[in-house]
Length: 158
Image (tube, rainbow, N blue to C red; front, side):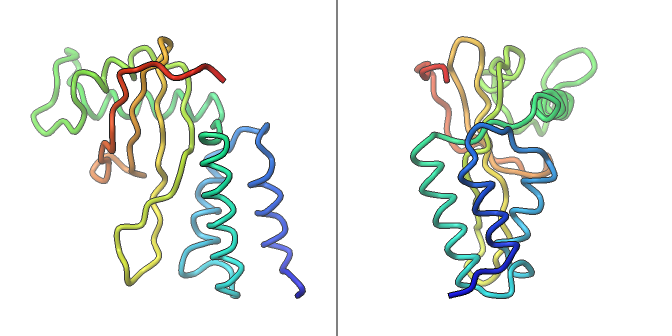
């Protein structure tokens, strides 16, 4: 079966575990496997399956250091007032804020779709502190942020 150029491009990107993912990569990958992406739905499903298996195998893809910093600043500014006290509708707890204050790096570790009728994927990120503790969260904007789980046991450094 002949595969599309887009399919081949995204498959190569998924298999490249060394190059950090950019914001552009994440946005367009979400679109490629979403409802308005690849015309052949079987290709989109195969890409999602390959991505999911690779994430299980390697634990997630690193994102660029610029995206690390941008995400850290965005989440801290959205969670804390200027005097560094938590906001009233803060979605992050003390543990998560501590991880962000001591952030080492982020992983792009999955896609989440909470709608069974419409394929609109949100990125899942893992924020890892310098001591190895981490938490995972969903969301492209702060009002969508949802903490999935926190891990107080340090992970092995990559």
